[in-house]
Image 1 (tube, rainbow, N blue to C red):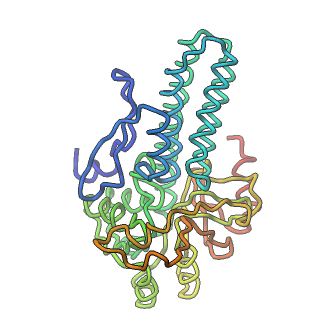
Image 2 (image 1 turned 90 degrees about the horizontal axis):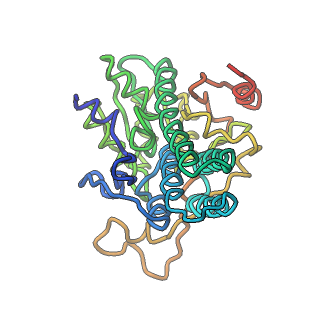
Image 3 (image 1 turned 180 degrees about the vertical axis):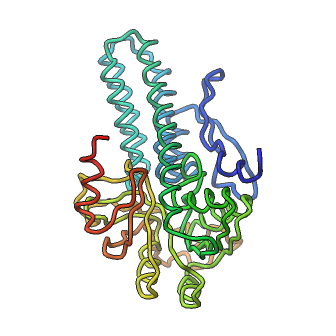
Length: 358
């Protein structure tokens, strides 16, 4: 396997059927240590999602599907109704770990629907159905990311500068990624891009993960502080912005990592197209607009003390630490999905994705 393939085909989430154990790469330790950890209990699974050991909306969904399969195997109740109630309880528990990423609730919903459909089957048949559904969710994301990468690649040309925020590569998905997918696919085909990766405060996903993936893949990447995005755009070094998404509302408003909306505003000012890339499972047609997207707030210590030998603010200083912000649909040039590129007005183009029965 080439160095590039080692990045694009990374096994960030793996269920070992022989050991009956779910394994993930602990992303909190990257880039300094690549450690694979097992998730065996509901508490370990919840903590892994909450603490961002596994992260990225598609990856969270894949992980949750395997989590429910693993937990289903531990349920002792023989009665189908009691089994379902226990599994639904696990689903609600895991779903509460991170409220913004819609893929989490989507994948849990898919697994629970499968369990209900097979509740009257013998236990082994029910477990087999859950296993097949979890695998299908994983394999479906691989196919979707590949298609997203193809469509996204059509938006840029050889030699372009691309700015990205946070991390939406293979670690955050399954293969290639969403926002990084076109870059990695293009590199695989011999194209050359120069990528500016925002560090993405306060948890530094851009520094720790995006620059890590791109550097290992042989992509020309430059790491910048978040407040440097304006100057690289002004200098004419950026021809497109690619970002992932955690939830897209029916009108195109998009929740992504905190700071994304600021990048979109800058891109509009400098006349640079700003694209959102993500699977249709991230589109929430039941959510009318960004005002209805729940925004996760995290511990302020992530701002004051994480990454520092000594605190960078007095203990009594208050912190506001939303994990996401919402980019207004009017700032988005296109939303790239596995079914194609949606253009404004998004109320029509996004709806058409789900009207299409092909």
